[in-house]
Amino acid sequence: MKTGERSRMLRGMTQDGSARITVLNSSSMVARAAALHKTSPTAMAALGRCLTAVSMIGVMLPEKEDSATLMLNGDGPAGRVLCVSDYYGNVRGYIEHPGVDLPRKANGKLDVGGAIGHGTLSLLRDITGADLPQSGTVPLVSGEVAEDVASYFAESEQIPTICALGVLVGGGEVCLAAGGVLIQLLPFASEETVALLERNTASLSHISDCFHQGMSNREIAALALRDIAFDVFDELEVEYRCTCSRGRMLEGIRRLGRKKVCEMLDEQEAEGKPRELEANCRFCNTAYVFGEAELMEEKEESRA
Ligand SMILES: [Zn+2]
Image (cartoon, rainbow, N blue to C red; front, side, top):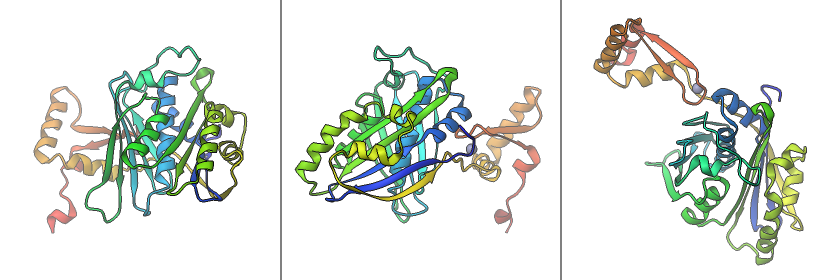
């Protein structure tokens, strides 16, 4: 996998207007996330599936400044998985315990459901101009992510949805391939098309193998929409992209208040360390170190 390579997404619709489809080859996105978070194979699959899903959800946001956050809160050893997408489908995310690894299931698949456990899936959309984010929460069906996402749309938004997600992990814990398909029915979908879509879902059960074999997004769309005429709207490039910066991290620490920051610096000193604080970005693991002078500096606006 070349670094800096982008993941590719295809968006289309059936010609009869029954359903829209999104296909994402997220291999490079997931490989980047795995490298940043040093994930075990099971954690890579869990995080990779969530990143793939949230990217396909993110591109449906209405405005350029909007964001979508997908959160899996399970009681399994992986802990929480949180992934964010922007309007363009660029994502960032983390898994609470990236080292968690479980034995493979009897069918040879990674035990993502076991790592996530029982709990809830939440989707939160921050929409420009809305007073509060739109959010919904549903119980996890299996913790395998794809069916949990489908269940979210069906239960929380009344949109019948087919979702397939897969991450193929090779020896040496490398991401060989990753990707997903999201199909959503539109109002007044034809019964005939719905029946064909349901029949076709079986061919999506090994979606990561399809990407690994080198199938294009268009070929995978044709597999999911076999015997259904469809048009491709557009193809976009998306990637793993962190939005952190030194300035934003500093703001985050200052928001704790001068008193709290002073106490933290005193604690550092009491432990024989320099009077400085380190903050790590959860999404890319970049460490930012701030000295006392910088932390205590009065902000321009507060001086005015
Ligand atoms: Zn970051």
